[in-house]
Image (tube, rainbow, N blue to C red):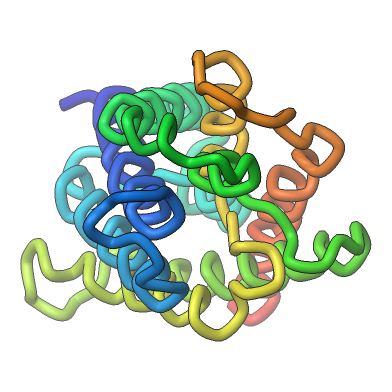
Length: 235
């Protein structure tokens, strides 16, 4: 599997399962309607685990532009490879979001709550305060990338289960820090599905909240760069 294909498949799986659990919780008349925030955070943690163990051997399973730029700044990835990773991640995110739309299309039609329909695809703040929302995305992604930098090439001998620590970090971030913004912590996780929300024929949808869309892109990138800078300093 090439790096591009691995990152495309990995990010596609991440969004299929991650946005899938959000759809299962937020949309009407699913088996999981109303099962709550804990279900969403556990689902996202497991989504990361699945995506990482499937493609880690082929690309390192960044599945996140913030991770890619953080690893590049930390000297663990050549900058010339970054465009390939990013193109695959944003494409995979769009494919995953498309599959969620098709999987849950009847339930999107049955749901009248426009915010729930948008929330199925992308994040939004619980309380809108752009400066604080940006900080929340920066600090949450800092935790993610800083932890990953100390997990690169882990020597724990678990084979595919080496992916488990990353999933647990994402679960911890969701449970502990995710309630303010929905913890995008990944530009491809938010921007690609937001674009799909804008272009797909979703009945009764609202606007895609483009005035907020820069925060879950810039915040994670700054958090990833900050984590890499501290890692370099400590090294």
